Length: 262
Image (cartoon, rainbow, N blue to C red; front, side):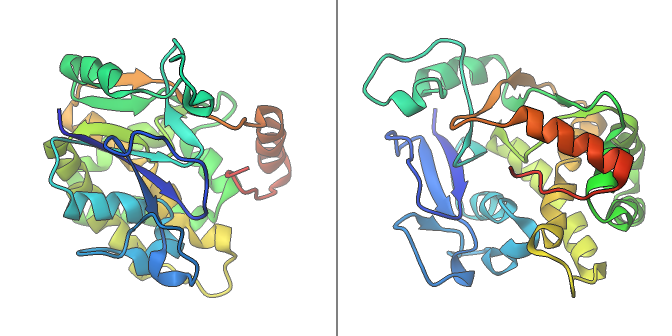
């Protein structure tokens, strides 16, 4: 299988050794003066110059438009799809990430892999976004979907009312599925971008198109009745889940915004 998994990063970091499978992408390449020797997201058809609004999606867009592969995936320099059994080799940091053999077995069973759902329990997806971001952005997303992709609105409302979702803009799919998903997602986000006033926003608040995109994967899956399989997505250098939980509760109870990246 011809598989390429994009590893988006904005800084130098330890990367998987199998470069035939995992391709590091420096996002926002055109916006910075320091480059790290990774593939830039600014070659060919690209939105590198919009990275500040789209976050890791500038890598997804680059791969969609410029890679000729059978399967394409998206993960982050800290977050990877992992297996339950470790590979015993000298690459200890990446001992659990999926290797080519494991991926081929999974993709033979089903051509779409997504992360296991994240559950919020105490609030819906819509409520969570509005407690942690500019609430009007979510309403704008709903408006844009109704205007340019109304056939997806019912599926989006199902996602909005749910208390769980496949998040982080991560996936591994056969390329025709990537084409379908991106052709649905990006026109919606481009229209949202046109209507958002970014002046005065912090760096975190400006990445709203990237955060809103997290809800479009499930919307696309539900509307098109896509068969998928879930695989664990793990932060390899650790994740402070307690801090995240406290921050989420404070955002709900006190209206405090927080950066979900910590």
